[in-house]
Image (cartoon, rainbow over all chains, first blue to last red; front, side, top):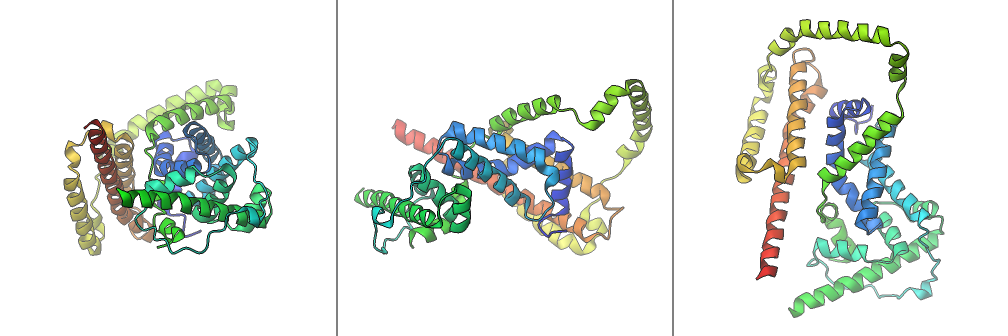
Length: 186
Length: 183
């Protein structure tokens, strides 16, 4: 049995499978907030993000008996949540244009210090990114996917994934630099 | 600190930036779960439907059995961890002190549960599950996993209290910001 799968998790999951609403609510309460943020960073519209999250959790409770503890329950739920978000994105045909490097504004390796930027500013700046590069950025930088995996998931080339990531990073740097300058001016 | 380093450092906080109305969302999900269950009866339910006379008889026997068993189960005493594992006494006391301090810091007794329904419900459920584990102690006394679970209860309670403290801080910040805007 995996180390990720504690006796307590096992009990909770058993209860969830038996449709024990208290247990289901406990599991939901534990993960809903973090998972909501995963979704809203990929789909920055509250109503859509909530719908996707609900659909994902319905799947979680339906498929829970297939969870064997190969990863932590949190990681397993996150995979379902990310898949639900990606399905939504695919249905809504968000395009991942194959950008040539020359179209991406190259910013020289900068020395800017971002330690004074707030978490809220980063969060809002990520949400404001264009659709395609936002998804790549979220998956790579925040969810730990590799470019090869992102390319497979989104049906793009690895090179496009890298380019979109660079584009997102440049745009974030520009946005956050503006905030820092504004803050210094105040 | 470059941007990637800053994001890595703030990774956990990035999952807590927005206020998420978990209660409202759970209520909607619960409705969907109920509907889902009604639409698809499981094999057991189908079986009951086909053998309803036997099912009623079985329920009467079960109810009578539960009534007969009830005095024994309610009389069962809930033991302390240290009573069965004396070597954990100090650890348990340390955790209890820490919890008591955290509860004092956030003035838990005076908090309105309606303001933080999810966290209070989580606390109540954690208590309920912990009590069930404690009742298992006499039977599974030597089980290391059970001991770990019993100790993890304290860690989980501390974590919930910390989340509660964060929520209180956030609420205060929102209120202060609202006041500033009003001024």
